[in-house]
Length: 145
Image 1 (tube, rainbow, N blue to C red):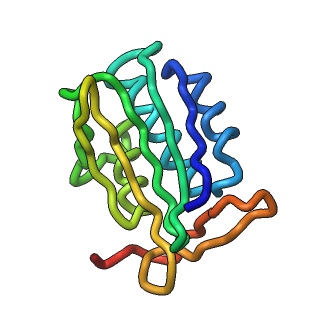
Image 2 (image 1 turned 45 degrees about the horizontal axis):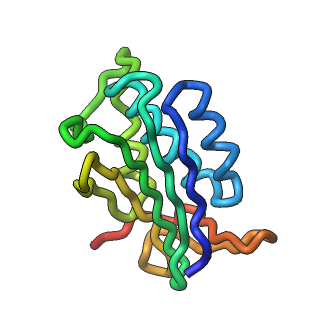
């Protein structure tokens, strides 16, 4: 397993772009998923909530992203459809489309929303290794599992 990247921050709109910049080496899909999850914290829990963002790659090339916040009750909900005029509600649909799988884990004092971007021919993404040695993924399709 490659070293993890861990970011401790207070969730604000300005920090969302900072998260994207900090995770640039992991690729656009990871950046998008992370920014959507941090944005959800801002929208549903409020600005200034402490958040931990953690990303790492396993030896098989799969990238795992976790966003932890202190509220175990505010759970993400994937909406069946979003109207063209609605300004929100697409974030989890994007995450669901990009990730091979995702979910929520409860822990002491909060919850972690996580997703994995798969690797390999049947895993939904093709692994790419950057010059810095970080695993990145480029979406090639959904994991049927």
